[in-house]
Image 1 (cartoon, rainbow, N blue to C red):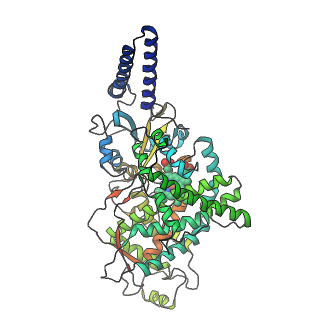
Image 2 (image 1 turned 45 degrees about the vertical axis):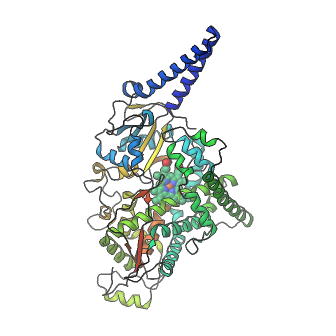
Image 3 (image 1 turned 30 degrees about the vertical axis):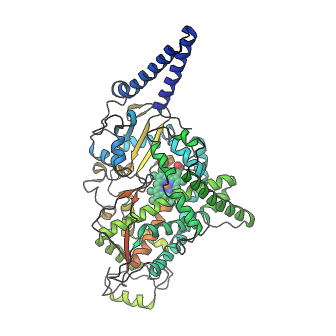
Length: 563
Ligand code: HEM
């Protein structure tokens, strides 16, 4: 169970103190005016102490390095509000000299800690994981939509749920899902061809984010719960539209951002009719009903597939309501994140056409044009292409082979490092607890900058700010698992420890399949290649304009290959 932050506790104590001081005076002197004046004075003094005295003269965090600026009343929140989600933390981690901890302040000088070293991150995420919990306010708001699933559960309840769900996400099970990932990826290739593929020179661009959302929703629907949302074929269908309402950052979710600075939770609980709140709840109900029907169906006919829901049901560890909560959690945590990662991949390969060509060439050596089996023409064209390994032409293509393609894996690892879909992590100290020898008072909010750590020069080398898949290859062109980083904690994309992303292998394999299918068949060119896209989003950060691209078919390997 999380707790409110120190400032609110402090303010509450002073209100109580002021009111009781007032009551004592009323009973002693019976003069209401004096009593009210003294109560007010106590309140004002308390707040002056908390805002102007404590953070600078008494706080155990006062000696830590701070970013520049930070003027009253907004303090460093003024900077956080001006730049895209997570960008200020990234800058601070990479520019402020520190020993692993940075202090910053938000509205009315409330103190926050930003972690910047592997040792500090390790303490919070691994060795003292349950001394820190997720943010009480945002969790409570999101829990109304998703239920108390794995993402939001705390303490012992979280341990119980993770133990039951873990087997469904182990790689030995994820590899059974490759055919689902691959068939959906191929379906999107065909649909892009009929809806959006352009011959060179024609100009009707597509939005990359639209295709990444469609393909990733179908994959999480089918591989997660055995249900085809059919959004690749039919983006106008009701379920796709409903899911869009849920993941779109409506004002409902923006309240969470405000909650970082002021205690909005209780206000939000008041029965004030807000259109966005109702719309989000209605959309959640539709999806919960779909999940409930699927569970009932599976229970009735006893047919369990290889999807995550079936595996969870077979474990027998969850009630039906808990299963619904888990499905809502996977739909929320597993859709937008992979869609965003894929969109950024399209952007960076659009900026780096040489990387795109190298990837395409690797894919053409092993994947048949139709993604299934090699045709006679392909066999012939490969014979004329020199230095191309000859695949076994009689075999159906097995998507598990993608795991063995070094450049494809390097490109996917690099996009996950360079553009982590979740750029910042928030925790709240549940007790007075030390991080790297500094005492952190109970209730302090602790931030981790995922994109800051992922691009830190000290951890990744001087080229840390470049998009460079080659860092994931050794000198023989074979896969290198660390990407050259000096610590395991340098790569924070899926974080670490007991609360690390359970969908890590699922997401990687899904992205691998979609990228292989798309770049095997298309060159994807940015419409505005010279513009840096504006970033938007509170939970994940994506290109604000949806990223306009053109899909051009690549020619087959042979003397005239265009990739
Ligand atoms: C590129 C894709 C993804 C990224 C970058 C990502 C990242 C993350 C991160 C950073 C967390 C930790 C959040 C926190 O503790 O504050 C997390 C947790 C989680 N993710 Fe993912 N995720 C991805 C894909 C997925 C997928 C595909 C699924 C499910 C199918 C999934 C399910 C979850 C769940 C259930 C948790 C909570 C785990 C726990 O608290 O024990 N994620 N993810």
